[in-house]
Image (cartoon, rainbow over all chains, first blue to last red; front, side, top):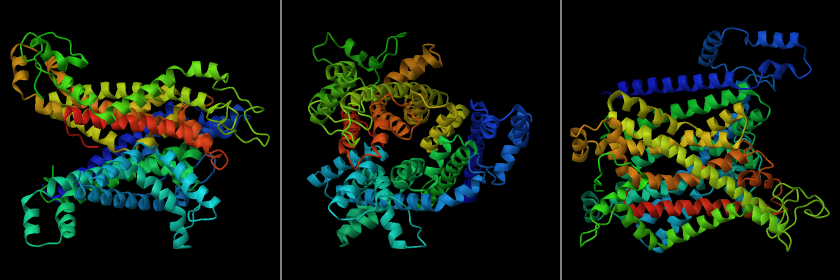
Length: 321
Length: 319
């Protein structure tokens, strides 16, 4: 199968998944116990007002009719209006996106760096105290819920340092990258660490296992015999083989990443999409909640297609099936 | 792993892998079943024993929660804004009356941690049990019947595994309203696919083996073969995954509760305690550290035990 056909199949599957998620969301939306029209019109509204709101939202039309127009609007990228902000959901998403993107990308990069580096170190110092220490610390962070790690980092690295007059890490807030790159990174450092440390354990283990597998191979011995420096052998020949399982795992972990972002934004008070989601849930702002859930799913579906392509590029032996 | 000899019509209980042992009882050299071997190895593993001890302590804490509440004289949900807070309205640190201090409403943190242990263990065990049941059935069916059934179920598992589960979970919970059983259901729904995938893979390999062919030639049908012949042989990986699913279910529940979408206050759960402590960590470290330590020790113990069980069964699993 050519790469193009493979891509087409993956995209088709992705579209089916998105359709399924959207349909489940639609069903849940109507199965929900809230009376949306009553919610918007307010408690004191008379029946005529409620009926008018219902008609305006199209909630009085046949269910199948509403379903088609719901899907149609989604295809056009229209997520409807927020009940509480009276603004299009897409506008709200647009406002929170820079925070969330900064947090997610920085966190993911940091987790890959920490995970791979500690895995390489553990493999090179195999069966020593270093190896056991790394494995133990990795498992410790792996067992920690994201919000707990965030709270502990706030307590230890922000508050206790702040008490002794050492303000290395701010305790929250967000500065746009375009405004002040250094302040941007400084404000995001603790949130990045929070996301990275919880997930790094998996990558540390994967890298260690893959390296130990490969470093005994003939081609690695040949490289060593040719006089290639040890660090070069490890990085060029060893790590190369670890990249494929890492890419696979990364695809699976994207959903976890988004969940971590929501929690981290809550702990550090960052005004991103995670905060928006939590606020929309508290205010029973269904269009915003649904829009964000769909956006998150779409992101994961698209990113997984990219990871699959990356997988083929990384390992030409992979059969496209 | 060797195939246990099963009597036709034998029930497929979890310890079915031990059946082979019974046939060899009267021989001089006693055959040791894989699960007995694993148990022996576990007993010599210090980390495993220590983890078990921590888990037993947590369970005791949960069971004894009403006793602790009676002994201290502080019911878990009773606010005491007069005695439980300092004159400035700040939670009290650990002292003679409140061993682990009080929270922002003057409630005893020790008592609430004990009640929180009930929730965490209940959610951990029930959600894991449900995930295992669904995962095993789907995995067996997908692996055994193959073809279209397998394609559809496998794709479905892939999708469930890759979706942003926390976001979809909180969106779903927000529609129906949070409660203990909704949390358990949502956690089980987003957790079974890992087990399903493993069981499917094992089933694919096992169904080609001779003992399955033998059972089929004796006239056994699909369900009999799946649950009577194949299931006993996937018990080991299932036990490993069950041990590892418990801590992730506990983390999932505490995260939902932290976000206000799990256990509804005033019922204590470690997640909602930590959520309440977020506004007080500057003045009351004990409010963060003690519930956090309870949560971390429990999940860490289960994760370490899971690793030890996997080593004891000598099977490779990726995580």
